[in-house]
Image (tube, rainbow, N blue to C red; front, side, top):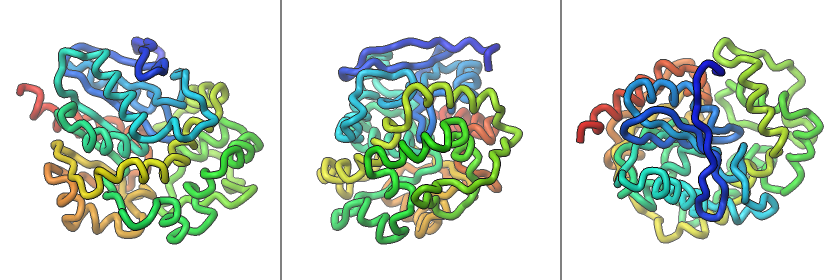
Length: 323
């Protein structure tokens, strides 16, 4: 991607130094990445949207990449209220003249985008969210307890809970291999990471859409930061549940297009297909305008199928750009 000039800057927001990457002029589009990712997951989309008359920006979220100033030994600093706070302040700082912006989220970034729309619907013109559907808060049971009950102790979210444990296991395997394993994961079943052996022994075989150079870019950043920042989002899941009681039953009142690959582990989790396809999500997200299920596509869909995803984003936002 070297031939493309990305504009990198550090913006002070909400007490942290946020690294953001942008390109283009026009209506503002905020891209929110997931785990184990960076702004770089959106490289194809930033270039495309800039070429098509938008100002595209992707931050490294707190705890990731070149964003600094967050103590990583405290998972409570990674609650969704804080992360949404970073993004709202980023928008207020970077585009104070725009009341509402376009938002695109994937994986954890999708979860954060849903929260952004619940907390500040006045900031979002329209949302394209990928991979992680809206998930209404269960007032009866905390998330980790629920996930343990469904999947058991080897489930990746459960394994990520204990500070230091997965960090040590990943360090033994090596950053580059860990990222290669994640980015090429295509098993639609739940992700289990048994103790001492989070991944199988098979070599990482990169698909045509992911070059060694691209994996190396991710690895170069994770070698500096480690994985704790990313894990802390999972470690704050129960805290998020406690902090968001006031939004129990709240609906997402923003126009949405939702996209997921049919091989994505998120789409194949128990009950999710029915929730997405049989009207459950439409009840919680009343302005859900379109659901796109991409065939034979895995979790990292914006990198695997950039042309299709670019077109889906552009086509949806085009309908709002003139207003």
